[in-house]
Length: 349
Image (cartoon, rainbow, N blue to C red):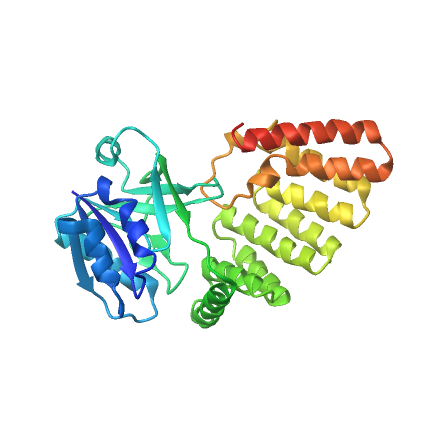
C-alpha cells in the first residue's frame, strides 16, 4: 500500500492540486492537520474521497517532528511506502508504468524525486516501517540512511508553487530566527549553518550569510554540500561586488569538490567583472571541461545543488563577453555559437 502524506495548516487554496497530483498513484491520502482553520479538510475530502485519512498534530514549530509523526501514522494505516507531497508541491509522473510497479522493482528504502528544472532532488518516498527519521526544525534532513539504500526515482518530478514577496520574506525571517538558535545549540552540524546562510542570503543580509556558509564549509561534512556552501558564499561576495573574494571562495570550493563546474563558472564571471580577463578565460574553460554540454559533468555522481545555466551555456557566455572586451570578435562569435548550442541542449531542444 502506498500512502501519501501531507502536512497542512490553513491551506484550502493550494491543497487541492497537491493531493490531485498524487491521488491516482496512491492507495490512501494521509493529511496531517497541524491546525487548519479554513476549509482545507473539506477540500481534501473532495479530492481524495474515500482515500482520505486525517490525523491531528498540534503545530510545535518543528517540521521534523511533524514529518516523523506522518511516517508513523502512515505505517499504522498499513502503508508499505510513504510518499511526501507538501501543499505547495505538485508531483508529475512522466512514466507510463504506475508508481506501484516502480516501487515493486526497487530495493531502495528511500527514493529521491528530482525538481522539474533539474536543479536538485529530495527525499520524497520512504519504505515503511521507516528505518530513517527526519531531523531539524526547518530545512529538515532525513537521517539514518546507509550506503546503497537510496536512489533517484526516474520518471517522477516535483514542482513548487511560488510565493509572493511578503510571504517569502516572512518565511525567510522565520527560518533565520529558528536556525540561528539551532546552530547555537548544534554548532558542529554543517547542514544548519548552510541553511542559515541560505535564509540570510534571501534576506539580503549578505555579510552574515557569508559567515554562515564559511562555517558550513569549514566543518568538512558532505563534500557536495561544503563545495556548494563556498559557491553560495561566493555568490554573496558577487552581490557585494567583492569580486576577488568571490574568486577565492570558488577556489576553496573546488578544493573540496573539483567536479563542481558551477564554481569554476562563477570564478570566471567574477574574474571578468574584476577585469582579470586571462583568469576569466581559464576559469570558464575549466567550467566547460567539467560541464554538461561538452564536458565530463554527466560522469560525476551528484544528488543535489545544481545551477543548470552554469553547467551548460554560462561558461560560453562569459567567454563571449570576455573576448568581446578584449576585441577578439572571432572568438566571441564562436563562444556565442557554443552558448546557443548548450542552451538548446539544456532546454531539450
